[in-house]
Amino acid sequence: MDEISLRQEILKGEDNRRQFKREVTNSLAIASEVAAFLNSAGGHIFIGVERDGAIKGLSTQQIEKLNQLISNAITQSIEPPVGVETENVSTSDGTVLVVTIDEGPDKPYQTSDGYFWVKRGSDKQRANSRTELKRMFQMGHDVYAEMRPVPGATVATLDEGAYGRFYTEKYFRPVPEDEVMLERELTASRLMQGDLLTTAGVLLFSKQAEQLLPAFCLKAVWFKGNDRSGIEFHVNDRFVGTLGEQFEKGMAFFRRWNSRIADNRSFNTSRLEIPEYVFEELLTNALVHRDYFIDDSVKLFVFDNRIEIRSPGRLPNSLTVDAIRHGVRRDRNPVLVSFAYDVMKYRGLGSGMLRVLSAIPDLGIENDVEAEEVTVIIPLATGQAPAQGTEA
Image (cartoon, rainbow, N blue to C red; front, side, top):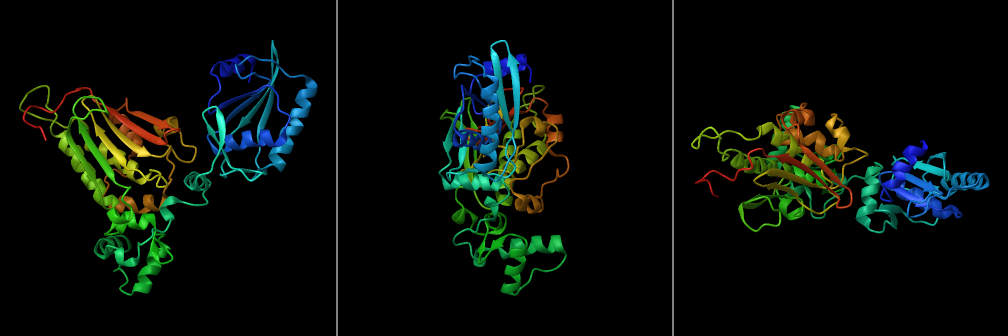
């Protein structure tokens, strides 16, 4: 990093990726800052810079002590062990020590005083909630929300007909009739843990999915106008059941809207505003790749000028919006991914987001880390309300 690049970074101010420090003298203090970046999205610590961005610089002696302090902090005060990069950047106002921390691959990271730290804007905070800690363990591949057993989800709640049809189509043999053998098959497929179905098992094959996991539903609203806080709408619905059932109901909702968009060429004719495979891909992603540690619904919002598909959770496993636009995929829920395409009868497997982006070049993708929500936005060129006589 040269002086120009350094000053450009400093001008952006402190946020969840940049931290300014005049000086650091405490090993545990710098360890907690590093751990917060590791448990979040990574970033830089600029030492020798005031909170207001003024460069004060460091002496050669200070830099030598800081490098030793940082080395001791990351080797003795952070678990699991990790490496960071330090760089001395000379400026006309003095030398700044830049500590670069990548997002940690083995989350969560803990400091020697027993705390887990995360970034909250420009500050760090202790991660105290069980949900947040579970999410970090998941990102470190130690636990998955989809593999948690669901209280009350015994094998009696399994939809044996639906599971039997799936099993026969996938494995070319009938499902075991013996309950012990059935449970063994479910356990081997990671759809059951102990004597209970997992979250994935319930979402895919339980006849009581709505009762067992009521928060994991699909909410669909077709608004009048473009304001999400508006109280007038054409359709306001809630779709429950297995992921397959939610997918079908969600697609029916989109088809209902799609078929009612009047063609500009004729008042009495209609056309598909958005290719159906676009909705198939985006709805599948929203249902399969969402964060199931968060008790909230996937939301489908249709406005006159756009469609929003909102999924709980930030992008998983270091995935970025730019990476998505280049065809990169990360699976937060590997069990759901391995089964859902069969259960949901999704026809676009293999085309992925690149096919969607080809059809909708100006597709918006927003990863709101603070709100923990990913929103995909389909702009509508027509900006039209339903044609006359199509009011729901």
